[in-house]
Length: 480
Image 1 (cartoon, helix red, strand yellow):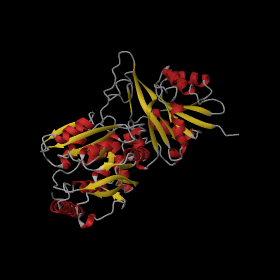
Image 2 (image 1 turned 30 degrees about the horizontal axis):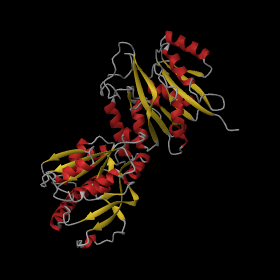
Image 3 (image 1 turned 120 degrees about the vertical axis):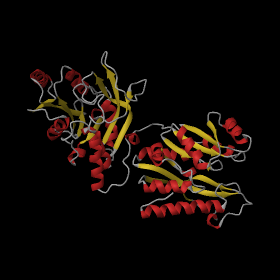
Image 4 (image 1 turned 180 degrees about the horizontal axis):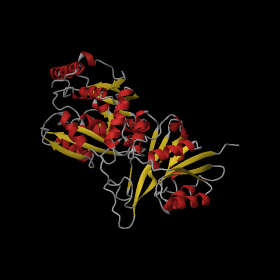
């Protein structure tokens, strides 16, 4: 017979009232908490409450056989209360709920399947905010229809016990933001995290919430960030921490495809047709006309063949500036770039999206390419490859990256006459963003007389400048 699993739910209590019944009942009403499926213990930690609350807790202890009541003689704060609960917890799974909040009825239904994955140790979802009558909502970027938001909240998650057994408890020196500090620890130690788009906590706003409308200074957030930086220095971690957004399991995250256009009437239809043929459908196309001199012939073809594309025109400033303009207009979680004369295989977008979705610690991903050329074109010696000669590509048409990764680097360097794409790859690696490659030829790279980098003098000047900068970085003094 399969052994019944235990869930320990930890609740710090400080002068709460009858709303404690609502919190406890929301746990007990979960469909999975039943004989033979999932046993539950609800650990209430009385953190130095007044006599009125202590009397209520005694009644609750008698009313609910699942409740374990622990006491602190003096108020020691939420971190200490949670640590006391963890010391007494007997479950293989741990969760939390504050005394004035509640779980939606399907919280465990949503989260439990994700913890079947050995690599996932923490699963959570969004927080839905509900305000009491006459109480204003906090100033936060909610989904306007659902009043939900993804952010750090312990009540929205489910955790495997092994996370805490490895010493990842709460810092009792912090009266506020101990949960933020714990989330930073999770990411520093590269724990497996999954965040869903569904709400897994209902947060009640009533005017006496502990942290609502407090400033970052009052919440001690700067101190928490200093703690994280110190830990990372001590453990020699140079890679950027992943953002909370990177762990969200979007079913179909929007991909912004950015095409710089300069004239290009001869090739742009073939190129945008490969965008239309992508098996991945959640795509927005942004075409930036970089001051073309063809009286709008290329723009007209884009409008005819991809009428839903965002099409903007700028003065001629070069391909790097055009890509940056497109990125500034993008709404997508991921950014992909495509030159006006290149082609994608139909599953290029879906393959790269799937990889980034499954690997939240990877910031950018490339793919393999094959080279193709017009028959009459004589390629430079370093490009003499057969069309079947497949290899990893670092050109923008092969690249997909998280939007915040490009933003953190300031985009492509538009001061370079050429080699801005090479400079971007150098900057991505120097910044410590993890990379990956799809080991399949998903890009068909075309070479012809009008390639911007075919002019050897221009290419040489750009690459020499990239190499000069790299040399200066190694010396510790980059001079532009």
